Length: 452
Image 1: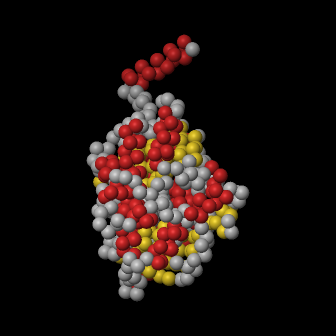
Image 2: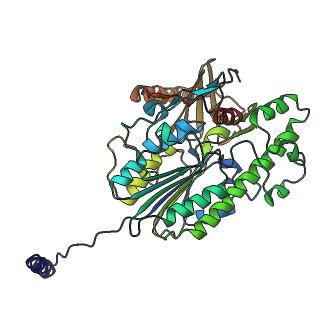
Image 3: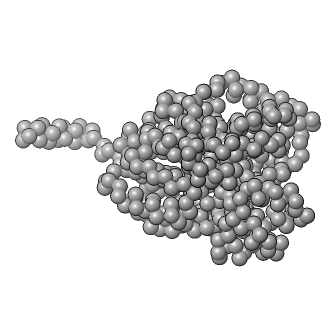
């Protein structure tokens, strides 16, 4: 031991004399990934919502990068979060379905263990990996715990309960070891619940929120069909939904105050998908690729950042994996070939959206200010929108903007060729768990067989 110490000392002296002293190893920063279920961007005050729904996110964004046109890869949880965890589009990871029929939940594909997940990459680099999931689709049984040393499942629990678990697990982490912490909140998902004091800010036109407080999706769809004042009902639902967002934002503020998060941490806050609230005739998600169901918030804070900036170019949550790996300085898995989200993106960069659920087969290309939306089944349609001028996607330009339509159609066709479908294994949810089945049914994870 003494001889080895002497040799080490001699080597250090030589390095100093030659001016080549070894650089100290840079410590790895903690990484926090926050995903908030069913959070559409345009209902966040960070993105221009008229109500102050996200004051904490606004403060956080002052020293972060805000993406103004971020998208989940699909419009419901399993495919979008599988893309976030693998860096792959839905067709390439195969987690695209999951339904309930005849009282049984089935066909939830497994996230295949042949893919190296974000958590596995960080774990291999020496990180302690902690995951807390509040959505039963993001579970150990469906493959989403891959790479997490600690994985806590709290399906359908409130943001407050999730926060309690996060504080407990973070306090029990290994001292001196870098941490990757993933937290998934559920609250903005229907049924929408009123949260004081924010619900009191509903204002005129939304007084009927009490009628819909806690109502399940089926009840809301029925009420919408029978409503004599759909505008008033929409305002009531938005008041409830906005209060859910504000409540989660407040919980996030408290969590960030309580956790010992250093200024050197990497932090990303996003969502899996949005929510239609009487947009295009629907309430919920997983039924279309319109903006309400796919555009999400995305905010990334880099270590020791002092100022913030905004990125206008369209981006995908599938590229968050590679971005976090780059920020920490870890080697990328070979398949993560797209550039970091923090690189200067071209205004012509394209984002691909997919929905392959039950009888639905939809695809979309978002590029620059335009968006191509193709339905292949159960009926074939072609729509083209200028989302900058028409964010509600009401004016179909497919018959007038032929050049743009042709260009984006080619992008879609090239994408399909580049990414052949991966056939994931199926996982049948235990049919003897009627509580889970009924809960999934009430939340809209149902094969309704309806042609919207």
